[in-house]
Each structure stands twice: as structure tokens, then as C-alpha cells.
Length: 169
Image (tube, rainbow, N blue to C red; front, side, top):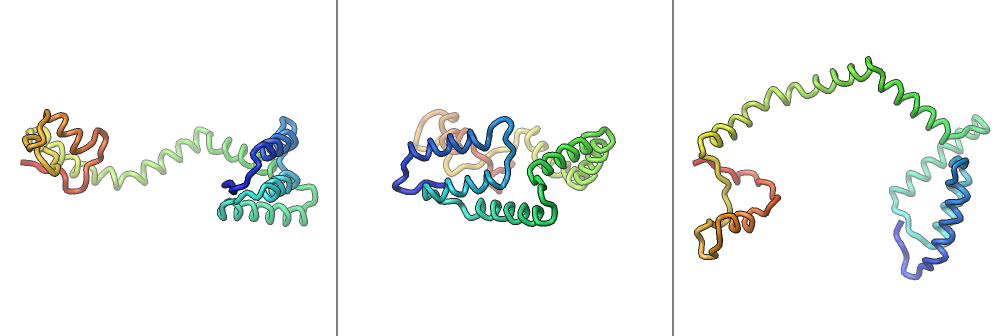
């Protein structure tokens, strides 16, 4: 949500407090009335909702409306919570964690097999003292200062190397 130019912040703050007290309390369960009140609050205060957020809310309203037509009294949020709890419990069993780890390692094997060559290309010159980073100027240029000052000024303290910026001599 973004704000419009003539927003009455105090009135919006009160309306949000009332909304939260009514719909987000300990015993309150999110339902269609909560979404209706939220849309009314957005419209009353002329707030702008991003298109992606509006699309998600429309999809939720459509799904809940359809489900309520087929199964009156169906609580989408409660069923979603129940489903999520069951899925998380199933995903965290020792056998499923083991299977997930096996799948992840199997997917990484091709990457790990190619890794030694690029690492060797960097560590070899590094061990021999031939690895250097190229920058636009040199520490002995007319700017003066220490090599450390030059390096930080040239490369920045946290800069990432650019492709082709490493050389071995």
C-alpha cells in the first residue's frame, strides 16, 4: 500500500487500531469479514494497493467463495493452517529429512564435480604469489597515499571482483 497526498494519518491510525482489535485478537480467526473490512479500510482512506497484492487478495476471495459454495462453513484459513502443520510434520520426520538431504546432494553433484578446476585455477597462482587484482590505476600513480589507501579507493572495501579483473603474472 502506498499513501495518497491528502491522507488523514490520525483517522487511518484509529481505523487500523479498530481493525486490529476486531480481527487480529487472540481468539479471532481470519475470515471473509476481515478481508471485507480491510478492503473497506483501504477504500475509505483512498490508499493505493499494488497490483500484485490486489491479485492475491482477489484470488483468495475467489477460492474462498467457491469453497463456501460447495462446502458451507468451510474455513479456508483454519484448513490451511491444519494442512501446513501436517505437511511440516511429515517433512520433518527422520526418513523424509534423509530423503531431502539425499535429493539435494544428488542435485549438487554435477556442480561439485566441476568445482576443482576453477578452484585450482585460483589457488595455484595464489600459492605461488602470482595472483593480483587489476584496477584502473596503480598505487604508484600521482594521487599519492599508501597502497592500502589506493586499494580501498580503487576497489572499495567490499567490492566484488569483476569478470576479467584478476590476473596472474
